[in-house]
Amino acid sequence: MLAEIFAGSTLSTPVLVRCGGADVSRILAGEYWRLFTAMFLHAGIRHLLNNMLILYVLGQHLEYLIGPVKFALLYLVCGVAANIAAFEYYLHRGEFVVAVGASGAVFAVVGALVFIILRNKGRVRGLSLQQMLIMLFFSLYFGFVSTDVSNVAHIVGLIAGFLSGALLYRRKL
Image 1 (tube, rainbow, N blue to C red):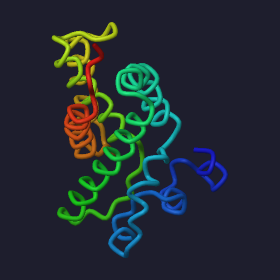
Image 2: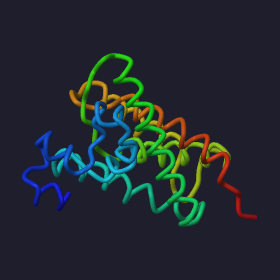
Image 3: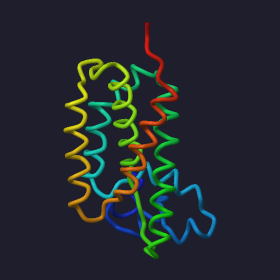
Image 4: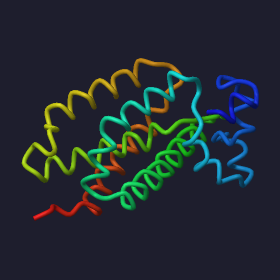
């Protein structure tokens, strides 16, 4: 976010591209690293704060349950997977957009927690399945009624997180 501010504006498409946003045309030209760097850019302070709030509230639970190394691996791999899916979606539709944000990775955290809660009979560390599903419903709903939101990244992040949770979580005895 600071790099974006110093480069001009967090809402300027040319600035987001210069800072590493997932520009479909540049990824097609071989700049695949943008699928990673885009996770660390945000279109405005509200976008950043929304992602940080969810990470603060839910991320600490997941990190405790699977450990910091597995948490970082899940977050980064699922975030890139979500960005790849969004890139393919936009390419297929012929939309040459610039995407930024960590929402795919954030939804992966949610997906992993849903798996872990299911594995623990509906409750873990003060989180219930009902709470997670309500939060998930509203997060998806607001994504679908908002403009300029990559719902493909959200859904793929959620699925990738759920599957990664199944691979990485081991119940403590």
